[in-house]
Image (tube, rainbow, N blue to C red; front, side, top):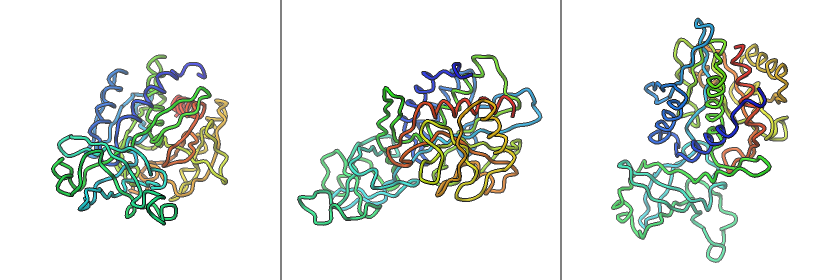
Length: 346
């Protein structure tokens, strides 16, 4: 299997999804992209009322159905106030680190589809002007969004069609280095979306069926903890594909896949997690096994919402999560390989 995953397809899908905006609650552009990718693989996408997309792949044992989830939503911002001078104040969509977005180009989209670019800056924006430029905490109350338009009042901004609640997304800056490092915003979780599609393509290219029915789920709202809260009743296991953390307590690296044993909320199912570890060992995949702090997934959201499912999670090690993130193609490819090996015997 090591040489049979289509890496070129994987990276193209990753870039396409990363560069298609989908901050929490904004599914207008990314869901049609999912439909296109699924159609090219010969599948249709079914959507539930929460806009979660499902690609349903039949298995050899059709009496069991498991779910593999990779969330489509990303961090973003929302217009919460327009100041009298035309500066826009924002509300956080997900766990934005405001220190990591200062100086970033962003785009606001209105309800009627108009888009305007702008700059995210601190209100004490210049060392030449403000004594507290270096020391002022960056947060929702000190950061501003400056439109790249000639506006100088609240009325000027409203005349553009911009209103409270309009969504703002950040430029991702997707880059792959010659040494295989992938640098971009929103590796969380668009890299895992690409991994799921790469596995579907792998099975189709080699005329393979998973051991049981697999519903690949692509939820929104993971970044605010309820993406996986609804699970179709047929599903008995929920495996979340999500980025893995890197830090002083962890064995994970950017070039490895990590299996999550426990997150901020709860341990994952012991038997299912143990099975993943065994699958990795049999497939000779160098997987880290870690406990993650200040972290959750759609799999545990499913359990916490009361669904009768077993939960597990794994994904590629990702540096600087919720900022300008970085991973390595080896960790991404091993995430695909672990998923393919697991589905062959799930």
